Amino acid sequence: MAVNTDEPEYWRSAQQWVDYQDLLDLLLQPVLDRLLVEAELQPGQRVLDIGCGTGASTMAAARQVGETGHVTGADISGLMLDHARKRTAQAGLDRINYIEGDAQTHGFAEAGYDHVISRFGVMFFADPVAAFRNILKPLKPGGQMVFLAWSGPAQNPWFAIPAQAAMDVLGKPEPSDPRAPGPMAFQERDYVDSILNNAGWHAVEISEIALELTPKGSVADIAAFATRLGPASRIIKDKGGTEADTKRIEETVAENMAAFDTEKGVRVPAMLNLVRARR
Ligand SMILES: C[S@@+](CC[C@H](N)C(=O)[O-])C[C@H]1O[C@@H](n2cnc3c(N)ncnc32)[C@H](O)[C@@H]1O
Image (cartoon, rainbow, N blue to C red):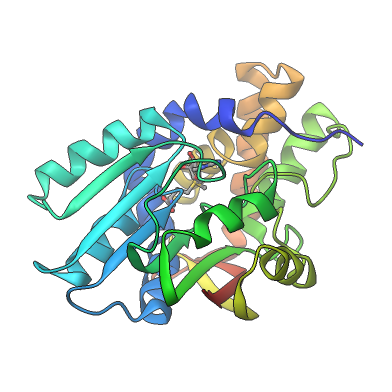
């Protein structure tokens, strides 16, 4: 089986995640809302946001902890952090700092944070036990981590539809380990539980939750976006797909996404793993 070790390189050059930041944040707003409900951040707290990307969750957390609190966003992608810094400055938020580094190995200051949070930012580590051992250190004793991860491709049409469309046109990618670093690496709840226990975390609780993703625009717009980012884009890149292949994939994605078109716009059901643990 192929083990994907390309994640750091993928994220360091993830220009499409910057270009589509506004659409991504609209798509994933319900995920952020749920993360914040679960984390229950309080004014004055210090928060570490792992894999913060372009900073949506970092800025939202900063608004919750207020003038007396502080949020650090940590990410491996300087490209995405540049965008996060710009947005943070534009929003006039000054109780935020960003750290560029691999959260698996970065030397975070000891016991500085009340909370660790992450929206989809912790599934990409080469060695997850080492990474979560490292992320434990900057948390105060008793401090809490809450993160959300995808629960599996079959339960997530946002993933399954573009992936299937790309495979129909370009063929299947090489089989890979479902636990290999990547967006679906934390689909098995027992596996995530063992990672966190082995990394020294306590009171680990993992549950599967359902919500609806809220992509904006017409079905055609959404299909274009879903094809240029995520699993279809990875298959297109690996297989050397052409612009004509991409168009064909996009058409199939549009046909299948139409099933989720409602009066309120496109609503895509999603299943996620909600993970909670303490130092
Ligand atoms: C799916 S994106 C999520 C971004 C952001 N949390 C959001 O919801 O918009 C995954 C993020 O994890 C970051 N990432 C991947 N591997 C990482 C690592 N080893 N250390 C820190 N960040 C990492 C990527 O650069 C990317 O920003």
